[in-house]
Length: 118
Image (cartoon, rainbow, N blue to C red):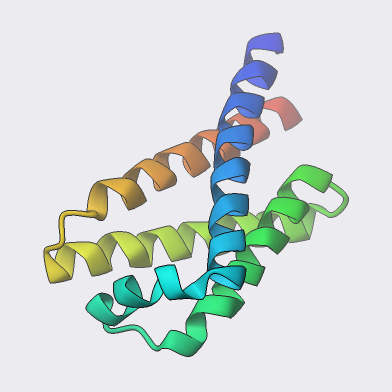
């Protein structure tokens, strides 16, 4: 049980810090993200809402106040990472490994969260 908690916190802290950093960049330093969104063909208006959603997802996961919100946060981040992974593959910009790593870290957090609850 203790090992599960250690791995849960390692994965959760890693993904939380990463998403908080991205959330701040997406929300407050949008000019750094604009070229990426343009190269992927995504609308630029999507940058700020994604940044806010990432920050809210971290709050939902770390606060552990609502099981439904926590599940929605995991699902939302997984969908976002999957879309990023596929998008980067489609345009061939060799950035897909970043999204793949994010999916793996998020998956680790989710799996060890489930193991702790059993």
